[in-house]
Length: 127
Image (cartoon, rainbow, N blue to C red; front, side):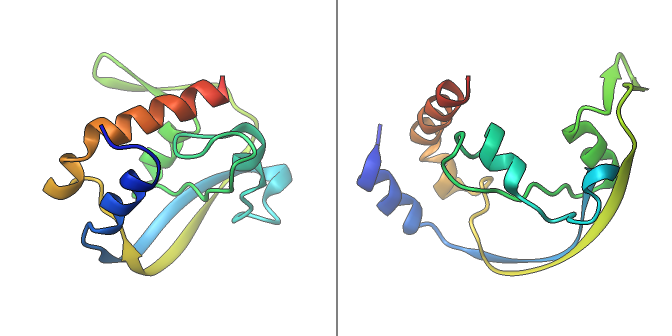
């Protein structure tokens, strides 16, 4: 299991790819004037960042996934069920990134034990 600098070095050796397309983000209407704000991710942490560690912009590949990400819908058996939420606005974000680490490649899968351990540490920090 890799940790610290050894993990960073191993991830740094993984091949990077480009990513281009449309992605989606739901934002509370009261925050709609700043749809790309990342302040909330710093304050409460998230899947890929610990509280107060750094900011992350979370986007989804479809509007339905974006709804699931904010827990506005859940899957009940085989149906999507709405969950009461404050009003939200959907934003479409055009993305053109030059260096993306895809987590589904074999080389990243080889590091998955180390990455899961890192994720557990983030989860512990956030709880």
